[in-house]
Every structure is written in C-alpha cells, then in structure tokens.
Length: 538
Image 1 (spheres, rainbow, N blue to C red):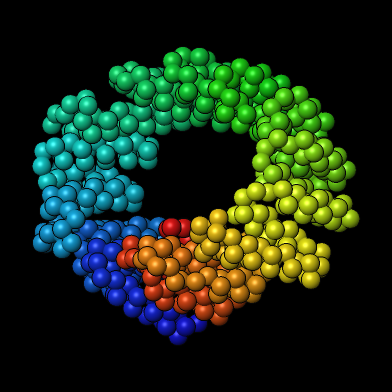
Image 2 (image 1 turned 135 degrees about the vertical axis):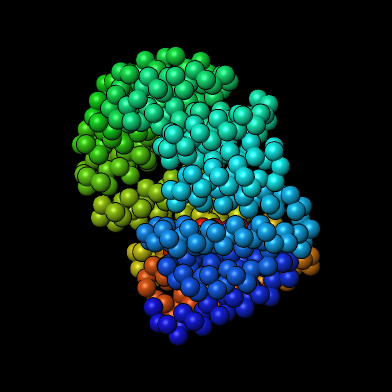
C-alpha cells in the first residue's frame, strides 16, 4: 500500500473524527481507528491516537485493543505494559464529560474490560487480582469475579475459573442477582469444557452444582452437541434423553442428526430427524441431510426426501438446497432435472408473486451456471411477465432490477437498460414507495453485486438528500452511504485502490449523518481501507 496515500487517507479519517461534536462519539470514532491500526500491527501509530482519546472508557477500550493485538503478535511484554497503562486511567478523573454515565459506571466498565482483556491474553491471575482488589464496590467485586470465572471457563482454565467463583461466593450474592446468573453461566461453561476433554465425571459433578432447570437443560444440550461433533453418538443420545426442556432437547437432536449426516450415517440421521418434535429444528436437519446426500452423489435419495414433503414452502427450500449443493459435484443432468421440478412447482406457487419471481430468477442463475443459456433466457422471459402481476411497487422495482442484471449477462444491453429505466421511473413517480432513497440504494447494491459498479454509481447519484425533515434527510444519506459502501467493497475486492479511496472519501464527506452514524462509518471506512472485513453499522 502506498505510504503517502495511506497517510492522506488516515489524515482525512482523523479529521472527520475530530469534527464529531459529541465527545463520547468522537472518542468512539478514534477508538475504532485505533482498533483497526492495532489489528494491522501499526502499534506506535495506534498508541499515539489512543493517548489523545478524551473519554476515559473509550481510551481504555482503545488501549485494550492494542494489548490484544500485541498478544496475538506474540509480544506479551508489550501487551502487559499497555494493560498497565490502561489500568492507570482508573486513577484519573473518571467523570463522563457527556454525563451519560456516572463515575461508578465508568469505573465498573473499565475494570470489566481490563479483566476480560487479561483473560484474552492468557494472564488469568492478573484478571482475578484486578477483579478482587480494584472493583468499585463489593457488589461489583462479586460480579467481576463471576465474570472472570465465565471467561476462564470458556478458555478451558478450570483452576482459575473455580478460584474466581470461590472468591465471588465468599463475598456473597443472591441467586437472583447478576453475579448469581454469571455463576450459573460459569458452571455451565466449566461442565461443557470438561466434557470436551473427556472428563465426563467432572462434567456431571459440576452440572450437579447448577440448580436452575433452564441452565441444566442448556448445559446438557451443549455437552451433547460436543459429544455428537466428536462422533460419540450413543453417549450424546443418552444424554439428550435426560434433557427436560423441549426446546433444548429438540435442538440437541437436530445437531445429532446433522452430525450423523456429516459422516454419511444417513439412516440414523433420518431416524433422529423424524423424532424431532419442533418443526424448525426438524426442517433444518432435513435440509442438512439433503445437502450431504447431494454432495456425496446420492442425488436420488435427496430428491425422494423433497418429493415426500407436503408443505410446498419447505419442498421449495429442499429443491433449492439440492440445486445449490449440486454445484459442488457439477452433475449437470441432475441439476437440470431439479430445475425442471422447481419450474413445475413454481407454476402453482401460492405465495406472493414477488416470491415466485425471486424463485424464477434463482432458477435462471442455475441454468446459466450449467451452461443452458437458452433455457435460462426462456425462464427469464417468464419472470419478466410475472413482474406485471406484482402489486407492490417496491418489490416490482427490485424484480425488474434483478431481471435487468440477468439480461446484461446475456449481453442484451438495450433490454437491460430499458428495464432499469423502468424500475427507476417507478421509484421516482410512484407515491406508494415511501423511501425512494432506500429503494434506489437497493437497486445500486444489486448492480454492484453483479459487478456493474459504474451503473450503480449513476443510480446513487440520483438519490436526493432534500427531504423536509432532518430524520428523512439522514435516512436518505444512510441509504446513499450503504450503497456507496457496497461499491467500495467491490472495488477493494477487484484491487482497484484509487476507486476504492475515491468512494470512501465521498462517504466521509456525507453531511447529514448524526454523530453516532459518523463514528460507525469511520470504523467501516477504516476497515475497508486497511483490508479488514468490515461490519455493517447501520
């Protein structure tokens, strides 16, 4: 990455962050930037920015992200030193300048974050020590120790988890308190981790200390799922039979059925699946079995399951699963046969016309994939006819956009552009579409996904930020930025750095965003620019 270009982009990001009025959101924005820089091992730069953060909790948040990044890089001494620096913040003025939090709340948040970070970098004794000696009040001490116990249990550190729990219990807390809930969570985690390493007697002994039916059922379910994943099917099934709550029992049976399917034990998978009493879990298990049948070449068996289902919506899900799983084994004749069945099913599809149209588009995609373009074109014409029956203008616009994109694949540019123009005309003229900006943003995102970035940008330019009310203007701005983010990601994926930077800079200049949205956008812009997968913050 060009160093000068990186400096310019970072300078722009920090400038926008500095302009955020709310101190809390401004601090949050800087903390986000620090997190990204730490993840990309730009430690000194990250630390320099972290030290300027005004809100005490956000400063600690930034410092702990640096400590974790140092630890992941194997530089434990630096990680410890940064955590000591973070702890020093508790000795300073903890008054929240924005008055969102009391001094007590800020202190508690900081101590919890520091103890979690100590556990994350493997310094369990230090986590216990901070929770025990530096909590704001006795009630916080019990909560923090119980939370450390949970974190240590999840890390498989039984000795430290038990030590933290014993210290919390020596302080005392009620069963109904937060510390009481955390205790149950910690015991559950310890039991599951014992089961993971084959210490089943210790797992059961720990389980016996849990006195809440919900936690017992949840723990048994988690242990059973771990057993199933390690191929201990009989032991898992026996444990599942002891689960009292129906939801956890059926969820565990679902996981057991899936694991049988994963290893090719289809008869057992089907047997378990048929015993599941909650329909969502049963459907999920059947889907997994169908997928594994197809991936292993047992196409006929997969198709038989689909044909036997009476619920048309679920039969549809199974047939689509067969088609999509077939892509892994490239059985064109089988895919073609399934597509024919899907077309037949679509003829009397009772759901909305928009859903039927979506199904037809999916069929088109798979015909293209197996090289049957004539058939794909035929179904695409059918999908276009179906758009005339779609009553919702919003759904009609999205359907026309999808079809326009597919015609572009067939290099029928004139038809594609005409359909796109028709979709935009509906957006701009139909009063039933309440959020024109949102709908145009969705069109642009669909075009971007199809690789048509320039067309997407033309659509984005049509989004007007001129609504009467400020909340409407912000909503339009967010829709525009969402679409721009999709274009930036696509350009980044294509390694077109100049265009990526151009789009990201445009997002940073969005005028109608509130402080919270700006902070989130700064995070996403920074992650995209530095090549880290970015979450959506809106």
